[in-house]
Length: 302
Image (cartoon, rainbow, N blue to C red; front, top):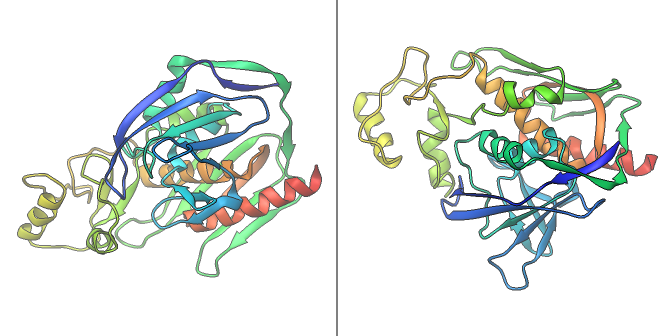
């Protein structure tokens, strides 16, 4: 099996979720064995940041990597699409501090990669196997375990109480990512929105790129105030408990998005691998901690 890169350049534009700045992301073919590398084209010298777990420095509502004092944020949806679409080497040129959030999923990345296609490279691809269980627990209900398997598969369970009861999502093969997982959008609880705004985050968030789950009942005047913050005239709570007018693409779309995030964060281990992933209440912090353990595991095996 050969390594692959994209067959041509891909360019996408949009706002970053947290900083709210417009940026252009250009994905370029990369040399064999180079993996995933970000290039900050807006900074002098166009500094490079290797997309590996060792460089993760922030996981608040997204994954940020940093190298030599230069960072790029909210990379997980792009990473998930790149890894799941079988692209082993790519250069991500971005002219801002954050990858565009687009619609809050991996859909537009998958569509762009599918349109341009991939090409085989003159280098062998080594797919590593997880030969023994590797796990991470935060002691607060989050558990993620990788077990030996003949392919890459995943199962995610999330439970946020009455606001979002237990949901399960499964992916039996990465080949199904485009149809089953890629278009599942990020979500946020209504009670978190104001907190995140006070933290100077989600400046680029709106009611079109995130599912807002209502976890507390408010008067309509409060919903309208939140709508104004998000650039909308008015919003109402749907029967499904979703605040905005977005329709869920799957009943378990939040759980599927959590599975999407895991794929993107574990791609930072720097290797293509086979394992059965089982996760309960995962998040970026736990995902990337496990990714670091997985990276060390594979480096020791090489």
